[in-house]
Length: 338
Ligand SMILES: NC(=O)c1ccc[n+]([C@@H]2O[C@H](COP(=O)([O-])OP(=O)(O)OC[C@H]3O[C@@H](n4cnc5c(N)ncnc54)[C@H](O)[C@@H]3O)[C@@H](O)[C@H]2O)c1
Image (cartoon, rainbow, N blue to C red; front, side):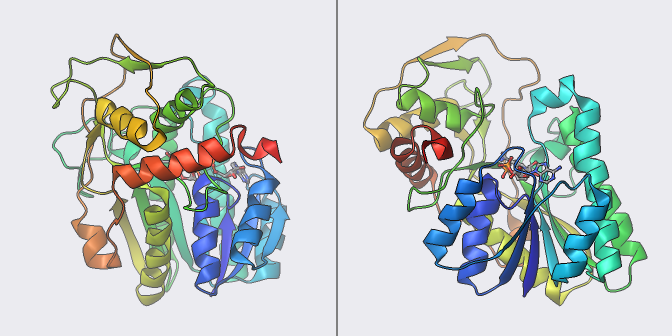
């Protein structure tokens, strides 16, 4: 299949490229490198021993996007491109709406012009907002609590409307829980710029000695050990879910939102302990006050992914930490080391 991959140079994108290439798909990556390095794509080429097209461009630039899609004439699109920092989205909401929402509208228009009717979209569990019940199933009310989450909910709505209005169109909205870990080679992984926004890359940098200690926001939540718990999903499992979603989209029309998680919640303290085992290092932590906006628990219902995609996660938290540490210790400065 010919697959056009927006944001393919990023963390989840590069892991997915490897599996797409291994499965024999023909690819065109479209990325503006606003949060990625071309080195990551060089490593994907080395690891896969395969080549693919690359267009350096911005999804906000409708003309470039239209030309790229028309030239490549894909059977399907995987749409990773987007900004993803919750805190930054509070400070710069218009940047997020323009990048994530306008960029996605441009993409669908370019797909229309190129006659492409299949899309897999990177959504997020953030669209659910505060849990009314757990685990989150796909029918849980959508009530995001920040601009980033609202961009994801809006794009889901735009894609659903586009699917209804476009004959034979099919869309899968993958609602990721907490992607972590790295490819087993240790050659690609998450390479955050500045202070990591997420727990796992922060822990990784503490283990590597790049940060002094981990601050845990609150240990008085109603969980096993009082620290917040999340559903972490290995990025290699997540990549596999995209291949399953592509196959599903090729076999059906319509629009489906599907969770991608493990169904298991891990607390902050449990994740730190797993990382200590993986790295063989003891990690300094301090417990500080709760952070506003954080919830006690989040966890995915996984039945829909199993039913429709025939996909289930394989890897547990130890494998997530081991692969993260292999990447972190082998690339202490991420892709900038090359
Ligand atoms: N990592 C997570 O925790 C997480 C969780 C839920 C959903 N998601 C979503 O999954 C997608 C991929 O996430 P990721 O972790 O790989 O992030 P990432 O930042 O590593 O990858 C996103 C890629 O999109 C590119 N990009 C951003 N804006 C662009 C634009 N306007 N035009 C062209 N390219 C652009 C970036 O350069 C980057 O390569 C994002 O849409 C994100 O919101 C991520």
